[in-house]
Image (cartoon, rainbow, N blue to C red; front, side, top):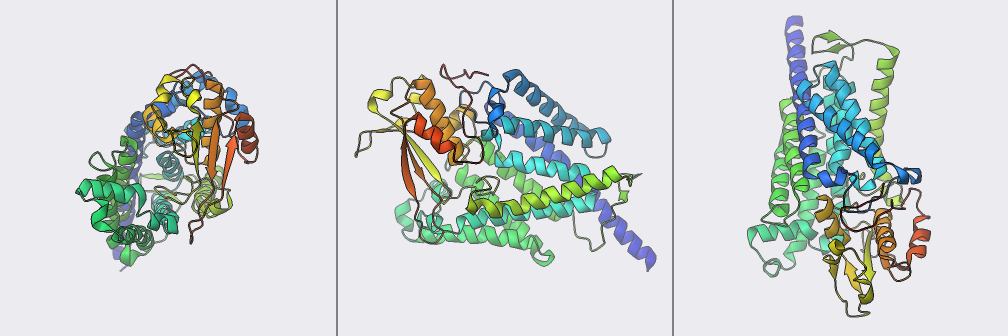
Length: 442
């Protein structure tokens, strides 16, 4: 009996070791591919305003950002080649996290959901023993589904018929909105509920395999809806969905199940972990950090956690913002920005500046959804084009979950935008941005 239990334990540990090794290389490969796909976002010479998280970082030299980017890429390549099995591979994971953190602090736009998730996974895989790493990684992934679904279980997502997700899926299937009618709201609600059930099912061993299959189907539908035959999103969004399929197969399939307790003293790579005070502290710190990441989104409705760190992706309820200019203010805008100007609108003849589309083309990544960041982009645009008094920003607050109602206000002029930014607890002032596309002052 004891021999059988020992063999069962070794088999479970072996599967966990293999899954952790496979997942670590999958994360490294995905991070390299997504960084390449969104390269202008990480380059300090991107033709899009940059807004640091902290005011003192507005003066960060471009060469320092280039150094961080180079260090992060070298760390990713080393991590991919060495894997978790070697110490240099685990140190490379930590170096990548440090470089990514510096780049994100220098520009909020870089806090893309995939970069955030990869950084947390890197810490888990680098510090925690295999089976414990599997457990914490599973918790992180389940929480992403839970919060993402929660952000869609509201009046605005159902009333809008699922927004760009359902619209893209209908385009992919060559079905017009008129053919669905009110059924589109049912489809939207079903998508949100389905995502919630996937996250819930991944938490229970009995339903885990079913939830895994459900998650693969869900990401397949997202790829169809957001891909080139649907909404036509940039590669970064699609690649993250592909990674989720690979990640889930590894975490909830390859890793298997084990009822054995985690033994922090051993690493199946063949070495006894050093039971040092530093080792215990590092594991305790990572557990605490992951627990914080899992719980922090609960503060999003109170304005503490930002939209993307709260995993509110593809949601229609979060705060939003629109930037308008007068007809006479179009010509001072940088040439590459003018093509994103739409209008005029009927009520006042003002023109809408589509900063979301500008972001997609200039950085190959969706614009950071926080109003703080978008106000910073508007302020940078006003300063670069000399629109200090005439630029207008219409700000909508977060929608009520049950009624869809929002608070709304209008801010006119650069001084008023700056005063609005002072109300946020994080920095919203942009780095100097001038001379049009491809030129951003360090």
